[in-house]
Length: 444
Image (tube, rainbow, N blue to C red; front, side, top):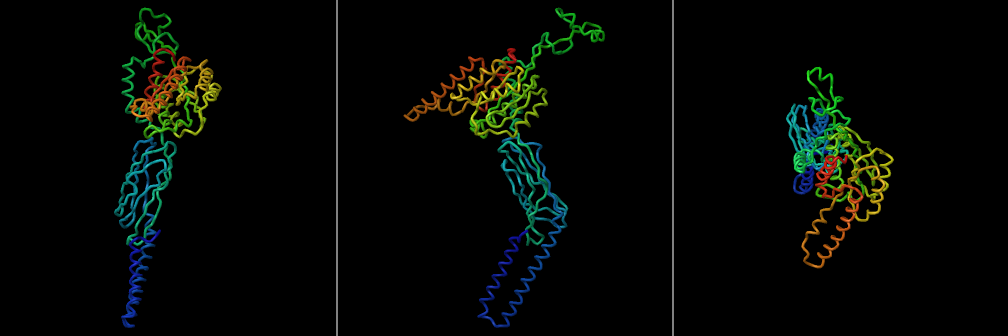
């Protein structure tokens, strides 16, 4: 609670009037001065009496002001979300308030605070937009209301509503909604089929009419008796595999590409590829290295995407150096069954020895894809015109770095590693293409 601007202005006016009286004493008679002083004190005391009445009246009325917040169940990184504040006035008079919210530091808010006038026994909705800037838990505080008293002599600061926590996830929704259709069309044009191969495997697929060449053992006698014609069981090859992602959380993942970091692009690619793999019937697991050490054993079923999402939504890159040998040694102790291991990282030529050692260790048992992020500035530097000495040095340095990088990737291919080398914003598309290509060729 504090005096309002109106109350302070009245008090300043009274003080100015008193100063004028002090100066006027030399020009007025004693009786006139006493009369003016009496008038001044009357006005001054009346102001305070009215202010006290206004104060105590509104302190009681404040109990009849309510507020509640409505938020989405979760937020997506970089996506605008609407927050709704419902303010109800159960007082006997209309109220003049300034509404704001204790929104999290991890978001950017627009159109808040907001001034309002709400009639008695009425309500108002205050809507404002937030854009999450960082993944993790977003903690909302109270709804803050600055309320003017009935005579606008006092300003009360009150808090209503409840604290709540909302999770900020990677922007998985926008990728799946707006790009999945185009992605599947692109895959279809490449001849990559999503349907599993039919055969004489162990997994039951469907019932169908008996065909020439079918084995007698395939006949389903119960179905044959019901349909009054030969019905065969059709099986499919058992193609379900374990897919394990190794996510690099090292210092190189801090690099920004647009509004997102490399690590944000890694999580987007991981989640979307996991979504596709789970729909294909594969089991998906995940391990992180170079910083946070998180592990989740391979899970099956499309519902498992929620488990994976909740396991990584608050994960961030660190300042640690990526140690590939140590990472694969941990993976081998945690998972011994054959799997497709997808390492998502940002390789430099100095990683050569460590990475080769790690690949030698893990390739004996597992199939490997390395999804490698490529910095956009490398492509830009190569394409930039060379018209002076500095640009020539820049071109030469970039070319040498790119050639070393290409040699490293070629050496990894010679070791039997499948490579998806791409820009961050295309990582999810190229990684899914590589995964589905392996499925089509029967590698997994």
